[in-house]
Length: 152
Image 1 (spheres, rainbow, N blue to C red):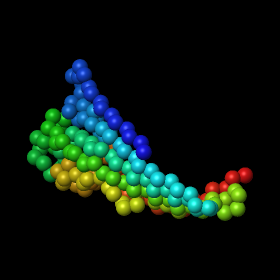
Image 2 (cartoon, rainbow, N blue to C red; image 1 turned 90 degrees about the vertical axis):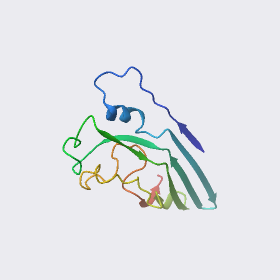
Image 3 (cartoon, rainbow, N blue to C red; image 1 turned 135 degrees about the vertical axis):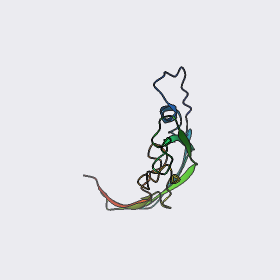
């Protein structure tokens, strides 16, 4: 089990930082990350399952094309976008054959969890459906793999 707790504060803000810059510094990274891991071996087999929880992030996002002219791409009029906490599951099963060879198959983000989608007025006509500044979960979804290890 692993827990990472963060809290970023910004004091004495200079005139050069707007709300989007402040949000980027203070709330683009989750305040918490919890990892639960179970690793088990039986004879030549090994099993690993990992559950990771990423805490909430928030971002101040510019309005895009669907808004009135005064709001589009403004540095003053921003909307807060909140990515709710997410859980991700990773699984790997492996077998060791002979002394130097290990074969494994696995999946990161087994259930293909993705971030919350942004509303139409924030996503640049569908070109950016997810908050690209958030350091929470990847927008690519699940990743499935096979691996062969050789020790010489």
